[in-house]
Image (tube, rainbow, N blue to C red; front, side):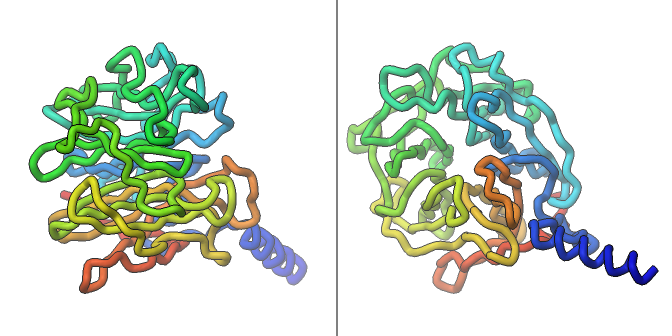
Amino acid sequence: MGFRKVLAATLLVALTSMGAAAAPPPGYSGNPVFPGWYADPEAAIFNDTYWIYPTTSLEYAAQRQFDAFSSPDLVHWTKHADVLDIKDIPWAKKALWAPAVIEKDGKYYFFFAANDIQNDHELGGIGVAVADKPDGPFRDLLGKPLVGAFHNGAQPIDQFVFRDDDGTYYMIYGGWKHANIVKLKPDFTGLEPLADGTVFKEITPAPEYVEGPLMFKRNGKYYFMWSEGGWGGPNYSVAYAIGDSPTGPFKRIGKVLQQDPKIATGAGHHSVFHVAKDDTWYIVYHRRPLGDTKANDRQTAIDRMAFDKDGRILPVKITNEGVQAHPLR
């Protein structure tokens, strides 16, 4: 028995050094919140249910479908496989990633990036699909990209859709260190000019901006968040700015999410849950297990997000235990 105990302890130390987490405390989600390699999570609340729509984290050529996950309480998750498949997007060939999903007038709209275009001569960019239910099946809405070219230097990827208080829908997007904001038509079939007459307005908040933009409004202020660093490395992270309008101007305040050498690396490309009934906030993001350097070995995690008395976002502590159950019903 002594030898077996020593062997068990040795194995536990080895697994821990490789990033394996112990079972979470009772009533906690644990991180990652569900198994599998998933990245770029989109967080949404539909019909008193939490939903996460992540990228299936594989080589670009193999990223050909999306799964979704739903939960009543942030702890118990149900997988909904293949809610959007590349076969239902006639213009897409590879590299489906970074969903943004919203509900409007009883329909669910799924924005996505496809084909990883490198110039305006290639077919691809940001598309939109539609379904009658949050678990799909989603079908391509336009038969072509919604945004299929570079504007202001921004690669058409990593879109986020933001609804302002007046009912206007904006899309913030962009890779290659540039971020644009556009105004969506009410039926999401195209774009409309912004108040200043521009269609593609650059709102890149800082030189450190790389990709993965997100926007929300709190106490009359617009919070613009984004990812910095290289997505395949340990220093991927999230920073933010605050502005008085969705078009800015925005000035970088600082990082709020980054690796913890004791927990995980490459923490970035996030979304948020806001539970309005008690003003609770959660950050949903991907990260890489300790000791793992493969770019696509990314897992989805959830931790608490909070604000100080002045409305600034406090640095997020990434954890292995995750978050406590928080039923919406």
